[in-house]
Image (cartoon, rainbow, N blue to C red; front, side, top):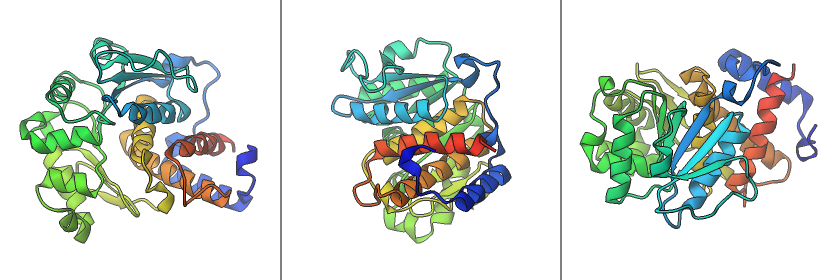
Length: 298
């Protein structure tokens, strides 16, 4: 066992495996010997405006260590802010304009540090109008949709693919044109309203995050702790869910299972003396990788 996770009780691990098999069985499938990087999808992540490059770097690292075969980052900048990620050189870099020219992306994540400029709005409109693969909207992509209703019409027929939205309460309030207090007063109603309005899978983040399907089913995530209330945690979650979608894991299992992995990783870190106070989003990533491998080790 990884030395970082020595304090995990064997009985607890058995319970986690049982929970995953019962709810997210695709997460428990071992990798076939006859496979290659193309077998596990290509994720394109667009965001990272000037001053916010770290957002998509966190999402990209989370995606790669959650099992995605290839990860591209598309920075919403005129040029690359750096030639290579020194701590994660396996991740490929481009500007968002360059990345949009690729035809091999199997899932898109857009919004992490994207900004809300006219250029960001144009890029989001382009992605929404020309995408036939699963798409996850987070952060500034959600804020842009809230400001410009015609970016994403209020219709489940407006998207030809799986659409996932991952708002925190303030972003949910903007999308619903009400107040954060209204969302928090009835989180179940808010997540259902969003799922119905946009024909999307919606994760309403927060204590015991809620996941709603486009057909109106709602479930509550059982994992997590206060350590997740830290900068970049949402970017990591977007990378995890996007990675699972790119790996062709069924949408429900990718979304709800991704939220569960993200929360459980924070619990495991706290058990091993890392957080919840001072937990950094980047630390979640290695715990998620460990978890994914433990779930397949029967």
